Amino acid sequence: MIIAADTAVVDQGRLLGKPRDALEAEQMLRQLRGRTHQVWTGVAVLDTQDGRLEVDAAVTDVPMRDYTDEEIAAYISSGDPFDKAGAYAIQNQEFRPVLTRTGCYANVVGLPLCHLLRTLRRLEIYPPQDVPYLCQTAHDYECGVFSSILRA
Image (cartoon, rainbow, N blue to C red; front, side, top):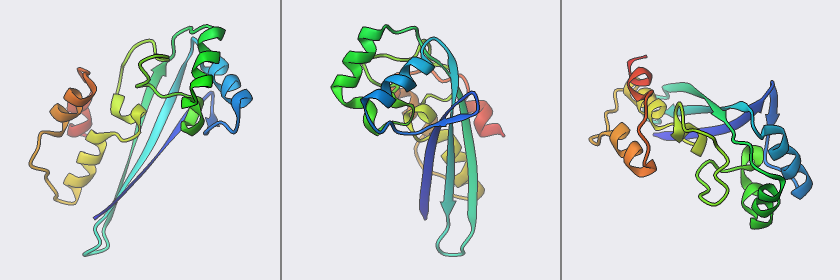
């Protein structure tokens, strides 16, 4: 099997990639501040034995908190925003950019595990572990969407 995924931050129909420099990181963080945007992740699984390809996509609404200009400056000086789409990491414990965790948290981190599990099941691959439980435990998060994702 080959598994591939890529995540994009989308705000008002505009794709926010990884910032090129501190100024672009600041602009992105100001743009997102106090508003809700979306994180999209595409997942693809290729069965190398028979060439079968299955794909899926996850979309999560992300409500950002109203962080201060000083918090933005401190976060940028940490260096964390520069390898992150949208210039932030939801899991950053110091900056804490997100107001509330809703939807698929793992999607915002970068790999929507229940969407991956759903894709694997279409290829008749069934991991022996309870993926939703492990995901919630690892992220210390009670997910309200995993059952609807897996039913779809």
